[in-house]
Image (cartoon, rainbow, N blue to C red):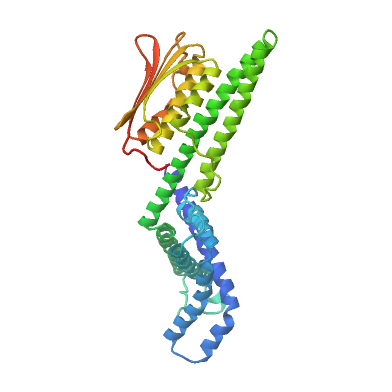
Length: 412
């Protein structure tokens, strides 16, 4: 049990050391390139404190400039997630704002600085521990001024072990500090995270919107085409004229599917910021054509429409059209020869839709509602309406929708 818990801790410590030494390698490369200006500062004879500050600025400036590159945030994020935190799924993308670039620059400077310290601990501390452990007789005296290894081997080994442990502990503290600080520098402030979450929600909502449009429009047209093609195949020999009529209906359905598909693609282009040439979406003013298509596919549809349909708000009219379209699609798919009655009541405050059709037999379990009814429910919910659907006691299937009409004559 203890061995199982110790192994991940050792692995994590090793990963932190690797992260630090990667930063140290970058610091070594920068130090070699900028050795000449640092040596010039050293030759001026200025106070040591001021010399250290200026040399640090000279070395940190190019590192910070590199850190402002957009891709540095992704690279540092991958290193932090894989080596420091152990959460590779939490990798940030490239920097897109000036604040993200600034935090990436600070993180890279800290990475290089702590890596240089960790490298110095290894380069200085490990040889020092080895010299102390070997003793003055073998290596010819003390390693550092004022440090003379004890003559007794146990004392020398204890001192060497202490030096090695101090170096390892220093690197471990640096690694833990970076593990705590780096994710905060990579993470966005609350306002940016909220904006990103809102953008993600907007993207998902747009995808749902496109899925509903594709299902309701193109799915309806494909259902009509499938029914008409089947009818044409059955009538091809005994009634060529009727078969030709069914084929023409199939062609019309396919053309309308292309128009609806162009509308959905137009919505996608509109989301991308280029709303040119977007085909207009059908609404309740196109209800007669929708009923004609359903009747042409064999559905026995009767309609009772009252109220001012052209005066409905554009959004309500479009969504109501898709709801009726989905209801008729289900009739064609599940009860193509059943009697169906559609009622549309456009009032001043409310639009009522009621679609009732007889069911020839018990519906299979997989046919009792699907993506279509889910899409209808989403449309009704978005408009703050009410939806009722399901079989009644009289053996008929009912789809009833009530949509509030907030404003007449809305912009289209």
